[in-house]
Image (cartoon, rainbow, N blue to C red):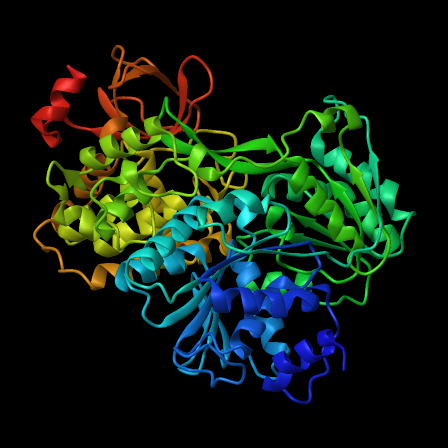
Length: 638
């Protein structure tokens, strides 16, 4: 029997009745297993469609890497787990289901997953698919990872901050207390050399994918045509060239909705289903997109569809060439989603989606000369986002000098200094290291700012309201502008805080069920997400000491005071009474946008800002009173 078939049968003895479909990755699985028997690290480069996400965890499970004795094939499943990281929740869920189907079991038995708000796991789970944040919290609770035998980093080329941080922390564990812990780094597009060198010159295994040819066409882009209109024209262009489904990559939800409206008449004429796909959809809605459809379908997706998930039937891709990425704005001190061109590697990943099952076509909505000027790879997140959460996590984990922490790539020194300053302002750190506040903050699955808000409201007996406010600040806006009774006008203010007014409006919706507010109609799906996030925050709060009830009679005021604790660097002073312009404590000019109702107070917080332009545009502000400020902050506004 050929070695490939032998390897397949070894893997699938977990399910003797299952006859596997041969995949390109099967050829190199014995090499990967052998590499991990003689080394504790390996790098696997496998083209899209090779089958690495599905078959590698099963090969490691079958080889006995979940037990302490891994020297022979045929070891029992053991007590340890193989943990595989995926960059997105949808990828973790769908990967777990696909792997479980090859074992003949339901997901949640031998193969499980755990993501935010959802899990399928049991005492018998030996392969656990998670998102990066889940592993980071596990590292905080169990610094030795005693119940894990292998950590697999899938799609590492995406270089998300949490993925880089998790890899560096796991490597630290391996080098100090767990030399038996194994690390596998997998990618379809990245150069394996640098990460192999960083992992001690570990073995590199390569596998070619099995994709069909994809004809790539370019469209001469004109900025006079809005992107949704151009995307719809692109769909019409490829519609007649293939009889399969079409996948359209767009930067964000706004562009998806506009493109859907542009395609409505075409979809009715051709009896085609138009299906949005993005991260904030419910798992049920995402599953509907991934399932087979009796009608031809056009999937309008963000970059969640770029890697890890498989949408059967796609034979054409229309690529806008853009994605929204987080970038840190030093002027206003926050991360902001910005629309940026994708790299050549990402564009190739997207094009490959059209050739998974048969020859396909990819239409790029830019010209070929512009393509040659694009970056080869996307920049790692740690070079462009706020590092305060990562720095706090490392300090709480016991790292004394974060500047010397052995990252795969070192973050910018300026970003580390900014993170240190912010954490000190928030009271998370002082000259002695992490404070009690900081230790409590790191337990919340959110940024240090929002964690400080949650702690402050909890300490004043307002934990539930604080959790809801935190969810409103971090999740997609539930208020659909233009659908309320005052569409096109600034909503009537109930307080001198845009943030508090929105909290009160959402609380009214919760009490009455009426979605119509002065801010617009509440989007029920977004509202469900906000309520889920708020409950998650509440669960963490309940693990801590309860706050006092003595402040409830002044609840709204203490909500505003808690905002000051979370945004101490965003205090601004109005230039003159009645003016719509102000000056932040750092010297940055700001001006109020029409979205804000804060018009009277001398001091205010800039909670939500657009930093573009000479003066940053304030979208949401909140009143600040001098008596709320410690002396150190009063000096900054005088």
